[in-house]
Amino acid sequence: MSFSNIFETAILNHLFTNANLTGLGDTNGPLASVTAGSLYVALHTGDPGEAGDQTTSESAYTSYARVAVARSGAGWTVSGAQVSNTAQVQFPTCTGSTSTVTYFSVGYNASGASTILMSGALSSSLAISNGITPLFAAAALTATID
Image (cartoon, rainbow, N blue to C red; front, side, top):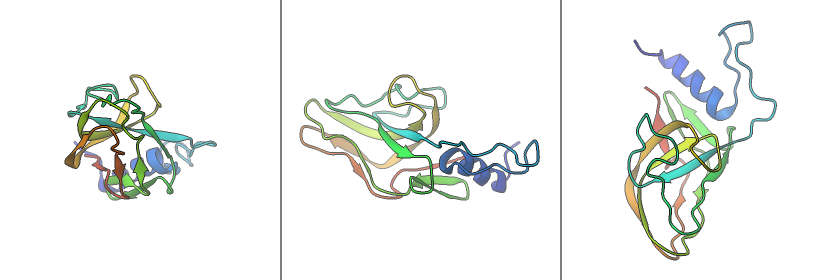
């Protein structure tokens, strides 16, 4: 069994752009949050998998930190069963050590073992070393619900 295409889009819009999920439960369904907040993008050196959390294979270069992205249309674009970053996502500049990242994830918290909402492979691996600032253009971070 799988979700319908229309429901996949509705779920993504509810989670990433804070839209109402109408038609489910009561008349209005699950409502948008009064304060939408942010979701946090993490970088990973390997696939965190469906059972992992945001600390699974998380990058650890010196100065690394997850990046907050607004839970709104300014932060995320939903198209069908895909979600991607609406604007550029810039991580802190590496000030020491190295890391080669191959995946990203989106979760609830700025740090710790946060639940992963979605994850995806980068279009190509990124070698990070001293002075490198990981930067992802709009629509570079894309994940698909299935």
